[in-house]
Image 1: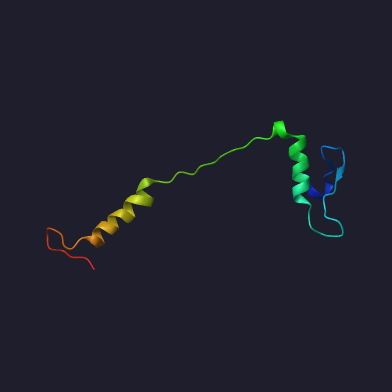
Image 2 (image 1 turned 180 degrees about the horizontal axis):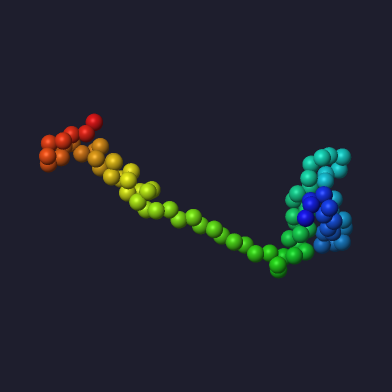
Length: 80
């Protein structure tokens, strides 16, 4: 729906203007409040969690930390 075509009333039946008085700013919070009050039981909340690979985020930095923290290895190789 085009936001300029929205007509909504608050819980008291008063018209909620889509733009602030004498301004080009959209009246977002009052419009959303009116929608939430009107359609509260139809609103759904979704939680999206993005999982990442343990190998990419923890094991590789831990490996390089162990390599650079080591003084010397059994075969005589040193780092740094």
